[in-house]
Image (cartoon, rainbow, N blue to C red; front, side):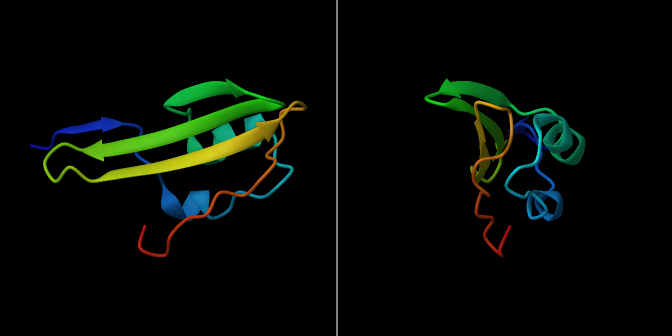
Amino acid sequence: MTACAGTPVNWDNARQIKTGMTQKEITELMGRPYLVKAQAGGQLWVWSYVNGITGSVRTLSVPFDSTGRVSEVPPVPDSF
């Protein structure tokens, strides 16, 4: 039995994110985000996964500009 919360992240898919991708393309690649936040000039989509047993937290944040396209590629550590 595991105790986890959030949205599991497929890190191989996360490494495929490119600047200019649409929100639809990101949803198809990553699934629905855990959180969507309004920010100046667009939105920030967040996938966060917490392992309740080990306490480890892994988060991916993807910023979108006002046109709904990825404005910056998020870094993904090799260890993820």
